[in-house]
Image 1: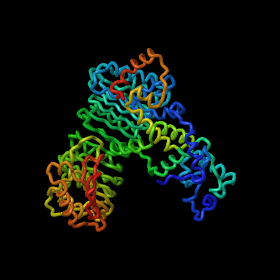
Image 2: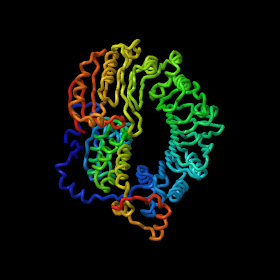
Image 3: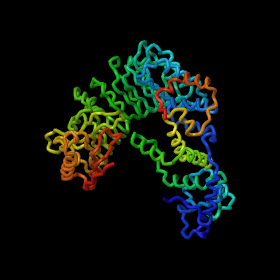
Image 4: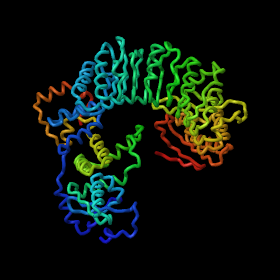
Amino acid sequence: MDVSFPLNSGKNRKFRKKQNAKKSRKRIEDLPDPIIQHILSYLSTEEAVRTSILSKRWKYLWTSIPKLDFDEGELDRRMMFMKFVERVLALHDPSDIKNFSLSCNVQYDTSRINAWICSVVEHKVQELDLYLRNFQEPLALPPCLFTCESLEVLVLHMFHSLKLPSSISFSSLKFLALEKVIFSDDHSTQQLFTGCPILEDLSIIDCIWKNVKAVFDASIQFFKRDAEYDFLDAHRVFKLLSGLGNVETLTLNVGALEVLSYAKELFAHLPVFYKLTRLNFESAFPIEFDREALLTITRNSPCLNYLSFGTVALFELQLVCLPTYCGNHDGIMNPVPSCFVTNLKTIEIFGFCGDEKEMHAVKILLGNASVLERIVIICDEFYFEFHGDLKKKPKEIFEQILLFPRGSRSCTVHFLLGICNAPRVTVTLVTCNGTFIPMNI
Amino acid sequence: MSNTSENPNPSSSSAKITLKTSDNELFEVEEAVAMKFCTVKQYFEDEKDNDVAARGSSTVIPLPNVHSAVLARLISYCKKLPQSNAVADNHEEEETKKKERKQYGTPGDLVDLISAANYLDFKEGLEFFNQALADHIQNKSVEYVRKFFGIKGDFEPHEEEKYREEYAWAFEGVDED
């Protein structure tokens, strides 16, 4: 251990022991309030509130915690839960509530819930995460929410129509995620998106668009797109993509892209994504990379340096997706996307199983990407477990891949065995540059 | 001891600063490490302005509120500091960090480390040790926390009972260890 040593340690050894023994031990009660409040900020809301009965000194120490998190859960203790939220919000001191997360049943309590939201807006909330369910009466979120100046992150998950006030201005909002939300009409939906002038990241998951015809105008500048499950209309997808010309990172659900194929005449009018450097295709099914829609997007991204296939979303247990290439062009993409010869440095593939079509896809990618620096292939551990022979098969696949002709001489192949939902890629075998090193972590 | 005054190979990255603890121990630490402690940094810069510390390691910075045993641990933590103190972005990473935090021993140790880090204005350390202490409170009953930290409950029983009722939600599903 490289602990710094006292310079005069030899001389003072005996002496020091004595002093050590005499050293006064501090207790938690000796720490100043701001420090204890900081410690409490690492606890869940329930835990922090629980400290209030430790002693009189602790009674109100928790009331400055900047993060409040309430989850009604499955327990049937509604009265207790509602009372708790109300009490905590009422006793919180005037300092900011930076994060507020609420997951609960709505039932007939829309006005109470709205009052909570207004309260955290007054406390200058920056991150708001609402998961609302079991509506027994219609909910219109309070107008003050939609003009909240401090709000940077808004996650709204509710299977309910989104009634919007006439004035929307999220001047600080950078991240917006809407899940299961039912958009009510064209005008207000459009207003919602134009009311977010500095939005960087938008996720729209399983939302209902049936009341909306056209939403995205070019007012949206920088976007990272996430999953798209429910664009059932090719023209809508086209409109959306057209509004994303300035995007830097794009995550596309392939299912949504496929819809474009119903209006092939639109391909020619897709924008060129001049700023796009990272492109992720994700899907619950094998991704057919030779589909026109995918190839067109890739061709229209001249500056792309990162391309991935698979799910990189943060949700638990998603199905895996693999690039496949069934084309009979015998290894030639015609024409080859320009980024393949100018910028594309990294390709990542999640959930690889090594079947024939996937191998073919890898062959095509390796053969055509002439400035590629590395390709990372992550095998689906479950797949190989189910099919036995855990160690041998990936090794064979890897050796086979190493034999594929490569368009780029300096490209390294990284072959990993892991669980494929990317946030927790647990690697058990790591290989690179042709060496095969089993590693148990 | 001659190595304190004359550094045969002086370069900015290996410049040393000497710190003196409450029990009169001297610690020679790299400047980069010492500068993590804002209190030391401030002192050092003031000295520099006064032109006293022109020869760097010749100054001894007194830390009358920090014991040598605590300082040694703070310095060793400092050296292990990761480059980026990014928030763990997945469960496993969080678990690893938690294990790391567990190494810093008893609550008494932690309280010493926290008050020293607070005195030294050592931000990363304060965050780390505060979180380590919070780990000890997590999911524990009030009785456990009181015993663990030697906190004397001074509510009347009926008062405590009242608060427990008011916050009943917070007392659901607590470990009674």
